[in-house]
Image (cartoon, rainbow, N blue to C red; front, side):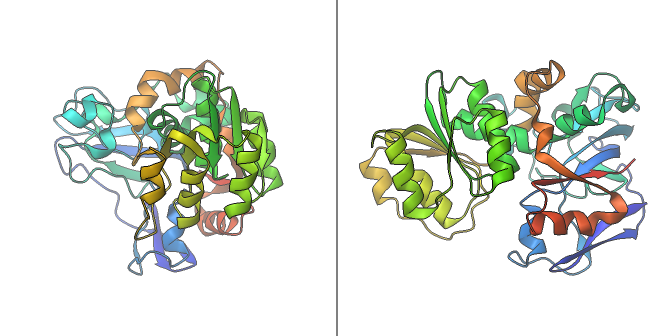
Length: 346
């Protein structure tokens, strides 16, 4: 089968490899229909994370058809159409019951990879996979895009809003204009935010943020961006902040634009080794976040919202590629020519 392998910084390629098989009793073999490139995939592609040459790539978002199941799988049968969340919770440990399956206590191998391929072996699929009604042919391409967004970015944006306790009437700042930040705008609106300030320097992303519900745009960064947000909020700051980048500057901004007692939902993968918590202490700022509870959110609210046409997170996919053109899909995101690259597998 075709699989995406990491060759070297700035290069991924398709190679023919052995098709995966069921190895454990709770494995599910998925025939991938659609996949994509995540912003976090770019850390290795850009050489910012160490990755071995000619290794399995870390693509982790897919929708597809169940091909085979292990003997312990009772919730799925071959032929089911599923979302493959990047987190693999068990559904019954204390973390999963609390809605934090990103930290599932039952599974050490809790995250996906290998989704940018014709088939993927999905571990611990009994609870974590999310069934979609019908078959791919029942849906438009636009709807398939929104369903694929539920494998990661829409749920991750929602996670930021949840742990920041976004509620009715709140003023929310979203730091980051990638797919996760834009989905954070959707999530803030879903949870009743009255004012949503999106921090974005790029016109195409600003426009999409407004489509999703942003009421204000702040293009400035760093201290200038903080000053602009404070000016928009009469010097008080926001009730909640969604940090969707993970850099030292974005975290610093997120902490500074919240009012005293604000909560910061941090879902950007961290890449700064240390953080000065002194300002957080004196402002009583709450910082929470981590890997998203994809299965929980999809099953409880997001899948139905997509099926009902209430949200359309698939709009974050602004360029489409075939699996054979996966390196071009990476380049489009690396060069900011695409907000998120959509990959048609089958």
